[in-house]
Image: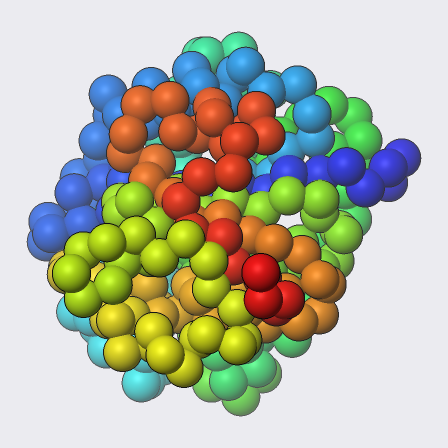
Length: 258
């Protein structure tokens, strides 16, 4: 890598798909709008998107969180690839030089946690001006045979591996909310126990832990890197552009209390 000024942006599956659908239903107009916002960014960028209705219903239908299933694994992988193609195509149409990078082909898990990810192609993409676009996927697993790998797990892994300077999680919420619906502006290890009761799962099918899973992954990242991540509403026009422009929006997550 030439330098480590890298931004990682996660776009939630609930933002770009109808997550309540029984099968893949992309929000194409929103994907195009998001692509237009990303096109204004000129730095090194890695995009990770969720699977939404292109992955979660399929995983649940075939019971892939608890068993090995060849057919279900193939159907789920091909479905998330379909969404990835839609996203990458929209990005390129907007002027972003984007390439797909499927975790199935470069990651290995152990009991559902990333054991290793071959990032050399991703790093060469960044060095040569491409924007790699990864996604939640099925990956080979040393203990389970195959397992679900969520985008929420990919983001902190890559942030540590690449020493990313900025991490954003674009969700369908304003950030992390308390029991009254009010935004929690900052989460750290010091106040996490006081607010974890507010962190439920997704209102739709989510096999990867919902908001609680996101926060736990990002807290772990902050402990290992002293970084700060932001969870914000990517459904709102202008928020992704704002984050990429350096604005701190939504809920900040850091290991240090402020």
